[in-house]
Image (cartoon, rainbow, N blue to C red):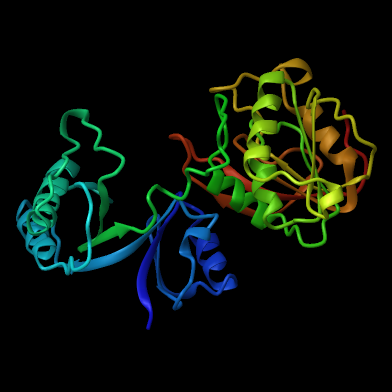
Length: 349
């Protein structure tokens, strides 16, 4: 027996989520929508292991005929009233709603219409998000999404969203969203990679996500900020850091300028990098004026057939050929995850 499940994702990486579902044999993909992948989960599959997904939900109802008018609220309430709630228990009910395009109702009206109907038969309190209220963490978490004229009512499978990684015990400003880091690692084709480098590692997210795909690799992270390195070390340890003696991935962390990476030329198979945007984290050191020194160093350290996967905002850096590009929506901006290979010849400084 299969279960209808929905994986939520950062906009732009939905196809990568679908690919992860297929390759991990977690189920059969049935559709891709805005920020969602609908699939039939395989029996006994552990869906909480999805790394490129923000969250995973179990579908309770799919409702067609949801228009832009306020009559849609009644239609959603009726659908929620018909949901089979058998066996569900909890201390309360909370609902988070979102929709694509303009509607003549708000997300809070959707949440209240559905939440009240879900809570009533369970005899549980409904915790509204109106006026900025935050529901208690232990409340049963439901989600309503609307795209076109079709709505989904679904229940969160885990006790918290998948993007809230247990290893993220320490953080810094501008830290990378873990599913985006996982998507970068997936695009890097890490199978067989000996050394993976992040020259602007921040809290270590990209390398910790890379470890899942390259368990035997040497993972090197450098950052200009000692506080970032402390966070990266703590997160790697919380995520079950292993060293060479244990036969697993070996982390190495160090303070260094992204414009002067302390590794030998041609010694790195893969580079994963989220350069400073200048928004939350200003460029420092040799990168204060521009990112040219970083890209020259990335070219220098990569092996001849090496790849760099970078989150870029201002076009493809000089000296690299673009193999693949995935545009994402992140923090109100639309950067590109770029898969880059060194171009032949010398790059003018």
